[in-house]
Amino acid sequence: MRLLLTLSPSSQMVPFNHLPELVSTFHRWVGRDNSVHDGISLYSFGWLRGGISTGDALLFLEGATWTISCYDASIAQALLAGIVNDPGVMYDLEVIGAEIVPEPNFQEEMRFRVLSPVLTRARNEVGKSEALLWDDPRSSESLTRVLRHKLHLAGLDGGHLDSALRFDPSYHRARSKLVRFKNVHFRTSECPVLFSGTPEAARVAWLTGAGELTGCGLGALE
Image (cartoon, rainbow, N blue to C red; front, side, top):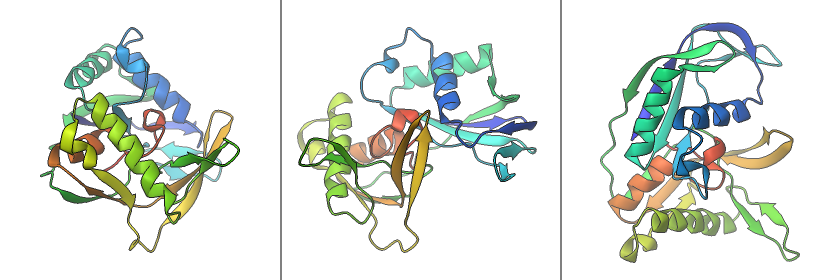
């Protein structure tokens, strides 16, 4: 299930580095006792949309929208219950509306745009984690590895595990983006991704995102 949340206007400055606050809000709504906190994320969420930059912060004078997706519908229901109980997000932003986003017609070949930058990584020869950008051939292996692990966790094995993801090589505006989460910086890619595989696997990708740290606001797809 995918939810599109409408947030109230706020005159407070929102720091660019507000992903930790979004993560905290998501887990507060879902509930601390929920199993969603453990292991790899079968959910994803995009960044807040609708803000204007002041140079060192964001302003949401006309409100914002926030997209959250969960493979497990029960998590989405818990999320909605949490929102009703406490609609506050951060910096005076609060949820004033929520709607379920209709699912696309999932097919064996699909192109997804990104709602947030995608993190792909691999271990180098000394065992250190290395960021792989959209133009690195190894990024396809990284995207596919994470997708197949999520498919297995979602109970989709067999032929579903032949599904794959890769960055769109025809997209000429691809760029890298340095994303800060707390005190750690990640080099990510802003580039659409191409899916091939079963329609059921495409749905998992759409809901759970591409690449790593989708539970921290990276790799959300539309």
